[in-house]
Image (cartoon, rainbow, N blue to C red; front, side):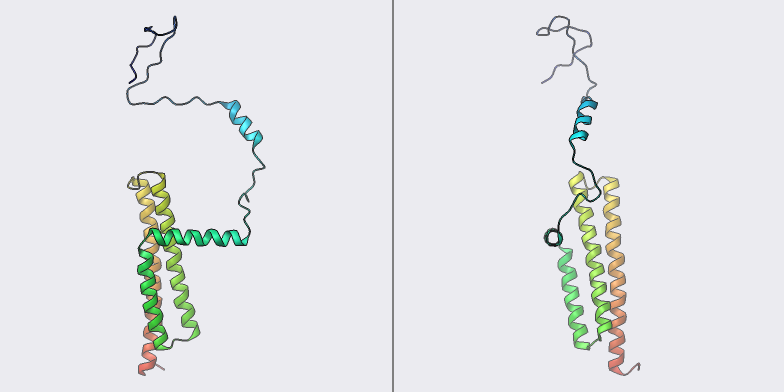
Amino acid sequence: MTERRNPGEAHEGDAAGATAIEYPRGLLPVPEFDERSLQLQLEQAEELTARADRRNTRGKMLAGIRGLKHAIRGDSSFFAHFYRGTLIAITASMLGVNQWCWCLLILGACLVLIAELSHSAVDTLARAIGNPEEPRLCMAREIAAAGVLVAAFGSGGVTAIVLSWKLAQLMGWVL
């Protein structure tokens, strides 16, 4: 345990005339800034470019697959989206929707997954930085959740229109 000392007061074990620095209780000393070592680090650094990550296409695809794996394993909402998407696909195939309707349904599903992946990334970063319940981090997580909500409502609206229109055609309510 460190003993608090008064400035300028010599204690036993100190070199002759050496003084201890007193820090206010609860505060830690800040390391001094060494400008020379920073300059050496900058001189030894390789050329700084905006394209620091020069992976080939295969490397980028593998990184994307690993990211998708981490997101799916880390959040149970992906299972719920997969389940709903499967039900929508079964319903659409039973109703016999055309190619353009399939494009709309797949586009809506992809937008929801993109929003969910973004939410998962923000949530992971918030947990890595520190306390995820800190107000600013909580706000960022809620904004990402709002993005998922908007994408899910938009996709749900498109799905409802596509499937109900096809059902209305099959029932003879519209031409």
